[in-house]
Image 1 (tube, chains in turn cyan, red):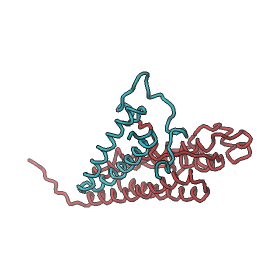
Image 2 (tube, helix red, strand yellow):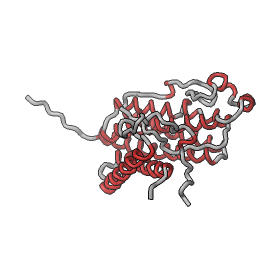
Image 3 (cartoon, one colour):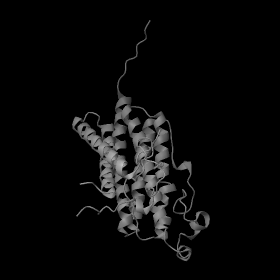
Length: 93
Length: 194
């Protein structure tokens, strides 16, 4: 089943956070091979999700996502707007 | 270089406006221990940092702080939307409103505009990393004071997230410091080739 925009954004946000945290950890633990494998897995997973998001709901990463016609980058809402964001409790049931 | 990712690091969706709280939280935008000072500090210090681990740590934590700056701006903005001028006038947000309406501007909670003297970039890697560890602790304390001053779960949630990040960053800077200390203590042999 296709994920809603909020579900997809939530999943991407979760994975990206995990990636950011692992990335910082690896900077000072560069020989932790298990963490590198986990990092690589997460990066591959989020790549796929980002592609799907891009296809269905618009652009996320500037210069790394494609646009439909007309130019989608300028589409509202922006991340600082209330209606951009999902509730953390959404989809947790 | 940087590329913008059109999303927040952690979602923010505040239902109830609270200009009084916005006036306090703005301090993590442009105040002495705020995210702007943090990002500029780390991103400036990295140019003179030594060891691969410490360079990467400054670069990447500096980058994450920019995402935190965006989160704080978002909290402040959302807290001031959907209220009347009268409500703003009656709140401690009124002096800020006189200067900036509900725009986001880098000042401290007490109204002092952002100042680069909040940070140092000393050119001594040990000195800089100690400053960074202290900065993370100061930011953690500030988040704790802010957390005490609200009971709105929509605001508490991102504030707690940001507080946690300060702790993780402190840990990483401590590890980077050990790499730098070990490197500086290594015995080196210099030979002159004829």
